[in-house]
Length: 299
Image (tube, rainbow, N blue to C red):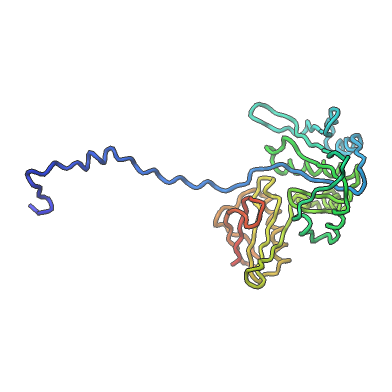
């Protein structure tokens, strides 16, 4: 008999099997939960140099061209419009979607604008100066609408925004979700014109230079898709033309808006050069606000 199998007569019997029976099984590692963005409130401000006159009946008439059954505000307080054509399903029933106009106390007029919104308005050089000249604001918000499919929700909110713009004639549209300032007439045209741009107000493409990085090192991202429950997009580049990358990000944004949140880790998407494929990974954004982005890695 081999020495490895011999046991002294006085040695206690082995107990390994007994102990193993009661040793807890190591838990299997839990799979990582996929990153995603939950839809959030859509809000937008209309900015005015003079105190606005809000004509609820004019807004109602404009809305009824698209939503014939829209109900007028019930009385005093915020102007709350109900849309029976757009029902929102909840666990305990269905309710009409709602949009509201909130007018702050105008006894001490003043406009609050996030500093970030004054810095990245590439299509309107006078945006910051025009916004800073405004003293009054109206806040537009969608209510009870987050469970809606995002195309329906976008259509409802932007139709509401355009109706209020046409009735009140603001000097600036301040889209808080995307930290963006827009010319009111341009936004109306982008929404109602033949080349409809559904993301013109709700999404911004931003550019950040890396001051302590390599020469021509930049981060470009989109901001605003996250509020619809979609991923924003981010590209960290060195030496690429920022204008070309910005155009590419707009293409990505509209692709996601058209097709939904369908890009998984490791998928590739068309890059700048013909035939190039850039790898996508879902991660948290490099630049706030905190949200999930598709980080696109140039090849």
